Amino acid sequence: MLEFKLITSLLIPLAIGYAVILFISRNQIMPIFLRLALSYGMGMGILAFWMMLLGMFGQTFNLWTVGGPLLGIALILVLFLFISQKNEMKYDDDITYLNEISSSRNESLMSKGLKWLFLFVMIMYIFHNIFYVFWHAMNVPISTWDAIATVAFKAKIFYYEKSLPPLNFLPHKTYPLLVPLLQTWVTLNLEQWSDQLIKIIFPCAFLSYLCIQYYFLRFFTNKVWAILGCTILLSSNFFIYHATISYRDFFLMYYNCSTIMFLLLWSAHKEKSFYLLMASFFAGFASITKLEGTAFMMIYFFLFLLINFYFKGSYVKNRWINMIRFIVPVITIWIPFHIFKLVTGVVNSDKTQLEFSVEKILLIPQIILGFANNLFLSGNWNIVWWVMLISLIHWGRKRKNIEVKLISLSIILFFALYAAVALMTANYTWIAGENRITGLSRLILHFYPLSVLLIVLLNYPERPKSVD
Image (cartoon, rainbow, N blue to C red; front, side, top):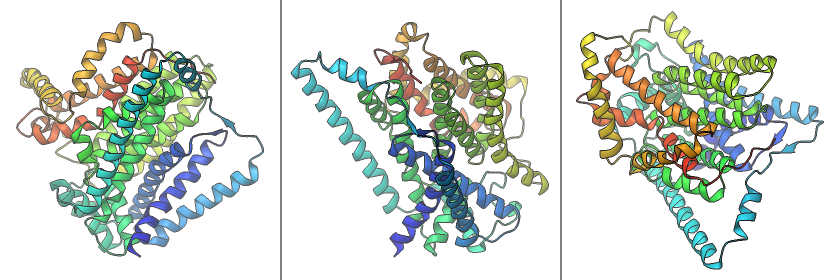
């Protein structure tokens, strides 16, 4: 019975997410694994946003107040699509399938055998890691510091109070609440507190992100290189570890990197607005996951403006329509919690207070050294960042590749953002000071998968042409 309740806690947000994905992508068909992966991220984001609104207006948390309206909206959207769907849905062009068939004809029997053996080993490695993440998350109870003291602690309060208490009563009162609210939802379904089962949302996010990254790499390369990209991603022990614990960083990584991938897919798909809307929604969900999500919005808007006004050859009218499509969902999701904090007087945080002095400029070499030690000597990321540096020798051959340019720029912007945070706020100790061993790795996790995307795109022998 408990397992059934746990599955129900996932199926309800999956249903609302699936309905929304169907609604905004009704002119195209996508692989079912991608639709389900996007439905999970969309559904969990909408669920947390809805619970946040309920809490802000003093409403009670229970299965009917939370799940009832979401299921009602899902049903309305599906009925609307069923009634109004008149145009025949069209498939996305498989831009790499012909490339793979044509290239395989010239391969010898031995090379084909080695290719399939290599592919089999990678797939087994990926499935092994998926099994490990689910097993560890479901068998080891919450034990890490922030999960106990901050994240799950808030979720337990929300569950037993059946409401959102005054923010001043919570630890780290200014922190966004997406992950604690999701854990509260799981507990509401279980009808009891469980230090193990509330972690189910993390391995599911892990699996969802793998599907999204595979699709992204599959679009720009081929199946073998897409699987290779997933294999490289999972070679990081730190990435695997955070998929099994109740920290907010993994969800921020999920929404952050997915947002950037959707922006690049939107650029490659020309006028298909679905990927732009997905980027907008996921950017909004990132902003209610951690404080850093709000700062990331500057990077998202910069990339959007580059694509919309520089890289995309669209009419001026479409550019402004694209801007509305991107801004409205982001602001709609981002602004309510910040208004709520302003109204309740919860605006000051030691994490966001400016603390800049001229003397801090002298710390720039220390910040650079802190980044270098973590990337190349910590063991958190295997040798992924080394491989990325070596792969940059292909930059000259790939300099006309828009995706390579934008991913490289994104990585630089994230490093620059955190360096600026270290210089201008009280967070220096967590980034380059005495606490950097535990703090900096979690910050790098937020954009670590971008290094894997860059490795694959830089080393892929040729880029297939996009067809709309």
